[in-house]
Length: 381
Length: 169
Image (cartoon, rainbow over all chains, first blue to last red; front, side, top):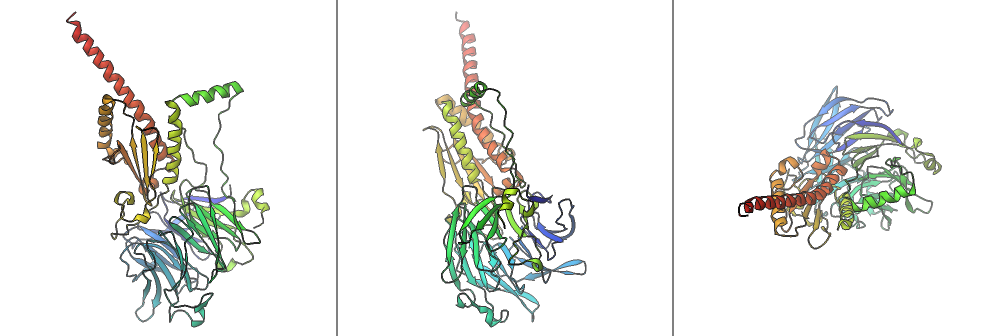
């Protein structure tokens, strides 16, 4: 098993986020609270709950923990978002004026942590920044560009470009440059000088709802998945991007994570993380599943005659339905994948080998690619 | 006749495995609400194509899916009038007690005998593969139950008639 520690924390986990040095993890156990656990990466550690944050009134749909400023941002189906900061031994909440009239579905801090983006069911994306004069977080909305609920948001490393995926099956890239918060020179991206809310690229590669947008560490590539069991890789994101789509024979995926420029891990309804890699020509392919699945025990038949007899018996009779058993670490859909390497230790040459997945079975599983079987180790990461 | 049962049920099982990829989805039309989209059908982009699996003209299964809910409607085999009445009464008995089944719908969809409504909340509380096992086992057992009921009705009728007519011989 490539899995490290398996921690069953609740009946169902909606989302999770790690702090800067991977010593604490914040999860939402499928209700309106956020639980913060003192965690550790070692497989035998027992995680203890240290804080409970409960300001929200409905399901908390997104959590993100800013590594440098140690602030947590949460968004919920009650149309609100809070920014939490640790003061002494208490987490204090600051309300964010989102101006949303539908549920918020996902949230992510920008790389410089002076902005964050919230996707919502109101078909708008809110980009929020801190206003010093009034001491609260205000938002600028990107309206009228999406045709349906936004499922995920992802910031480019340059803190200006924002990718969003939506249930209208498209992935879009916007400019989220805010005057006064971003320096003028940041505005010059691969697209030139762009103002806030301008839709730069619309990717229409999936035929069904799209989820899980994620940028590669350098920002050169973007990946997202579609509910039609496809995964799409877009490289050289700029005025002339190149895209590669893979149709998979398995159940749809939900979230992706770039481990390096050439390796990506994705998880979904198969409950088994999948590893994808690109070769030197930049062509992405599926490499393997990361969870070693034990095949179900087979009943032995001594002779060929007995086996043949069994076959006829099965065909004619009212067979009691086969007992389906699970053999993966996660027993239900994987909904979120997070890296487990602190920002300071991330290197463009060193691909990440440690990441965590959380799922609807209430488990947070730590994966260490160094422990993966021989066949995979031979494929140098 | 039994030859078509296995492929029919395998087909339904595979379709359900694919269709039961549900997730929590807050309502787009009304704030703070969470509704099974397959029932309300307000946003066309949230619905998937319905699939109709027919064993023969008399037996079929309609599977409609959406982002957070799945509706399975079954039409059971009804060969003659007696089976018609028995099926209707039996399935009505079950539908009335839909609360205890959790995934059953109180009224079948128009044109079908019984319907299931499975939402993402059911998938969070219960195992997906167990839910599918339940639906497939239900379909197998329905046929058996109705045959048994028909047999017992016929047997009872024959016994009663024999006893009654005995007094005339």
